[in-house]
Image (cartoon, rainbow, N blue to C red):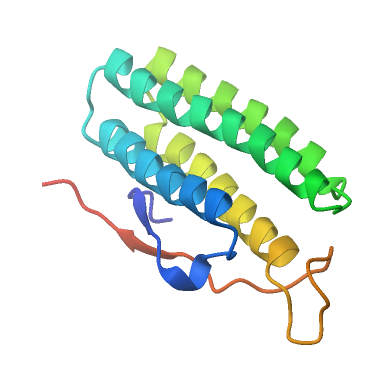
Length: 154
């Protein structure tokens, strides 16, 4: 199994068309990549934990803002959003345990990367209307996957 950290790359095709959501998602990708670099560089656990804490704070505030925006637009929040929040807390515990023990960093970073990709895909499915849709609605759709590149530390 390839355990090299992967970078996320945002492109306009990942946009939902809802500016505050898209802006938050772009920042999330940037902060994840900063965190990933800290994890792979074998930076001190304190440095990597700081990068994670910044990312985690952004994710938590983003989810609150996003839920408010969705409710304001009259969308029914799918139950998966509550499950995703629980999953994020579990991943946060994995990241902190990895940093405290100073081991399994690639696996911890990959778990977080996968959560972010799932979150972006779910938001895209919820917010991007199909041509036959009238406005926004809850539905499922396939998001072109975020491109990821393996990065080998030098």
